[in-house]
Image 1 (cartoon, rainbow, N blue to C red):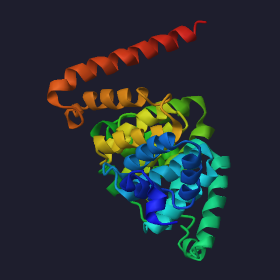
Image 2: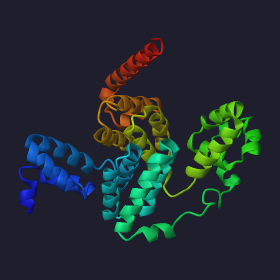
Image 3: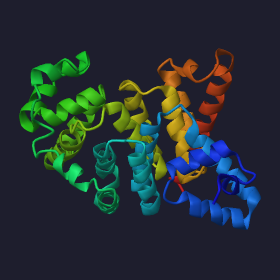
Length: 326
């Protein structure tokens, strides 16, 4: 098929961009849509191609977020496409694998196992599976070369001075608690104390698995990892955890525009009903709380956007309260 035949009456830039992100499946999908309804093909192509070409996220981050989203939703064909695109764009295969493994925290074993199998097949087809295996992390990867003295410097003063902290550190160790204090200052210690009162055995397992085991692996920088967590949560319609990790992503260096782009990308993956306008409102109210709303909204529109987002959130909260009484 020649380029002219492939593009037909469609936008060449959108075509090339969509194909770049979906190298394995795009041609077949395009041909199917084009044979059935050219108007829909044009709408779909422009939306997909132009969305994935936007520069609010660099292509590496966009592909890593997509990897998280397709892992969480269990879309194996789309995951294979994304992994291939990652290889084509020179994304480190260990980073692609790390995104899949990090989904264990919120997706649990089944989707991660399925995604890992697909990852192994794609890497084997590309002749890179041995490379990935040779770079496997050692068993003690998340605890070695760490210093309590150095990590104390990353804790907020309120956490470091909290009278509950010494006892919790002595009973549960510092490696999991320290990671949480770095990532969620002012909140992590309260959750640890709550779980300590409810079920100390589970708390020990949770700290060892999530904060010591997964969040301390160091393969991905925190900014990228947290953007992937936000995208993965949004892909399955989980807005409570996405809100929490939006704050963490901003704290670790993500920009408001990057967060907004993850939301927009999620709309293409999971559909608009779960995410528009709820996730947009979450970002607006979070940025307003942090005094950063001007980074995505012009000063002349801030009051209007604030009122609209707040009113919608209050309306949803009222509906939720009513539903618990029915």
